[in-house]
Length: 81
Image 1 (cartoon, rainbow, N blue to C red):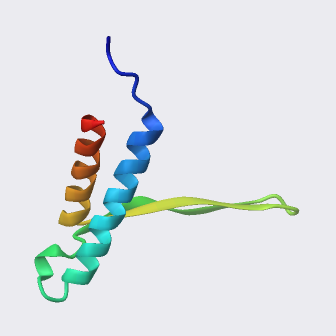
Image 2 (spheres, helix red, strand yellow; image 1 turned 135 degrees about the horizontal axis):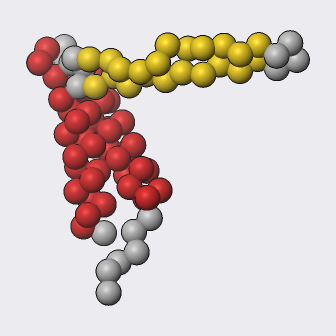
Image 3 (cartoon, helix red, strand yellow; image 1 turned 45 degrees about the vertical axis):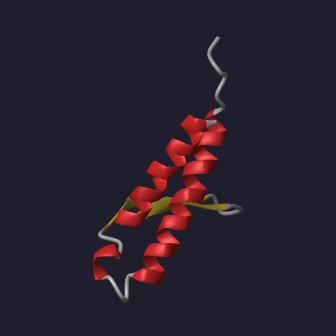
């Protein structure tokens, strides 16, 4: 019988591991410039103004080598659960 896996656990683990990888990359990038973020992907903010309510949509993701390593580590931890 296969284990029932929750998608939210995967998302949380990959987010935490990605944040840890990004933080470590920011700390170590002055000493090792190769570890700095090398690309940023996302959508530019878009604004919807309804006079009584203003909504802003958008996101960006800064990706570096340690961020990718963190995502991979989060996935591997999920697989071990």
